[in-house]
Amino acid sequence: MKTKKMYESIMRVLTWGAACITIGTLVFLVGFILVRGVPHIKPSLFALTYNSENVSLMPALVSTVVMTLLSLLIAVPLGVFAAIYLTEYAKRGNKAVAIVRVTAETLSGIPSIVYGLFGMLFFVTFLKWGYSVLAGAFTLSIMILPLIMRSSEEALKAVSDTYREGSFGLGAGKLRTVFRIVLPAAMPGILSGVILAIGRIVGETAALIYTAGTVAQMPQNPMVSARTLSVHMYALSGEGLHTNESYATAVVLLVVVVLINTLSAKIAKKIGANTWTVSR
Image (cartoon, rainbow, N blue to C red; front, side, top):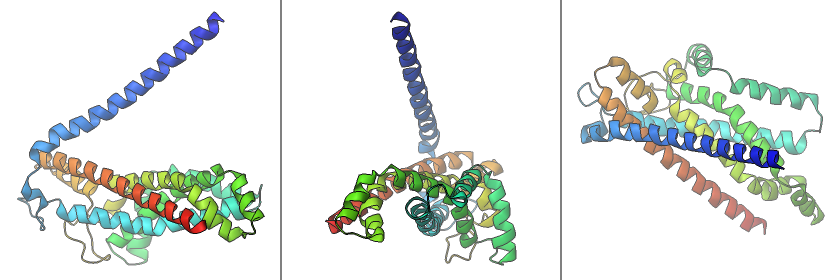
């Protein structure tokens, strides 16, 4: 009995210690970025045109939003529909399904620079898209596709079979059950994968240098070169002449990530609520 209590006390201390270390690390990183970056935020950083004097981040900010939307537009439907097929339609114990899952997990661990080299060879060179927003978006969509597919699959698996059985019992077909009952219930898990994908898109640098390029200009169309905020930070810090502005860019990037995640959460919640209302 004493050994059990001692074990529980030790595990409780370890759990609290891990939680404190994690929260402390997060607070330190965010605080460091804010302290170093906020004092250097100035109006010239938000000028519409970039030059060597103002090193404006506005073109990079617009490019980041465009790149994120394009990548999600490509990857989310493919990932979610693939997860629906693997979970709802594929036969249990199918070897092909097991191979797909192992492949997706393997792709998740490939370094981003490898994706960048692939994007450069295929999209930039073979398809002759050149360094462009579209080439970067397709490369990023391939990077985040395994993450979205696996998270969506786990979210669909977590939905209780009683939902499906109840829907079938009321006369609903397979397709109606999936899109009106199962998918809304799995929306929080799918959203988690999308949010993680957004974080990887916004923070990606290596893959975009090889595909989207580093030109600091407003993206007039998907076929022009542009730099995102992370690439903009890399360029400024690499030059060594605008280190303070790179910290200011980090603050803006942090705010952008929080805003995009909040907006995506609200949209997913609204979609889920509307879907449940229609199904009723």
